[in-house]
Amino acid sequence: MSARVIAPFHGGHDHERCLARALENAERVCRSQGLRFTALRRHALELVWRSHRPVGAYDVMDGLRKLGHRPAPPTAYRALEFLHQAGLIHRIESLNAFVGCADPEYSHAGQFFICDQCNRVAEIDDAVLIHQISQHANELGFTTREQTIEIHGRCADCKSDRM
Ligand SMILES: [Zn+2]
Ligand SMILES: [Zn+2]
Ligand SMILES: [Zn+2]
Image (cartoon, rainbow, N blue to C red):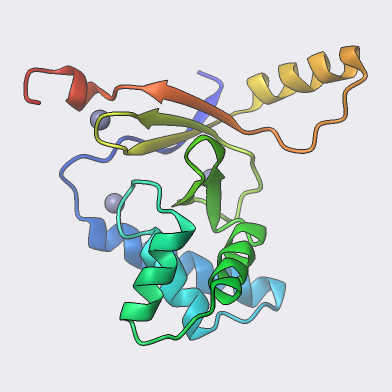
């Protein structure tokens, strides 16, 4: 397979470890890019990483408020925008929500498999697919702004009888 699995559909696992790793990654990314990882940004990232399910901006804002921040909506949006720009989170366009990226130090667009039943998201990075799309765009004289691929359906857990 030409694709790299960045995040599988995580089942029963130690999510604390995912979260701890995400925060370590974020600290490293910010340090190497000379960016400030403020308390607000950190909390926003923790909220997005609460699970492997996409989180909307409104929920992040709500979460920040519960953590004692008093963010006006633009502040919360700016924090998410910062995390997005730094590659720490991805935007799931079809759900207008965000998921954390498990490998932010590696620049990639990512392709997302979204389970409509449990809402979990898996992420891969397929270089061949990206290359093919670029070729198609070239043939069409099309300038790509963003190359987000989102596939909706059901994960293996939700397909089985265990549901
Ligand atoms: Zn996890
Ligand atoms: Zn990613
Ligand atoms: Zn599922």
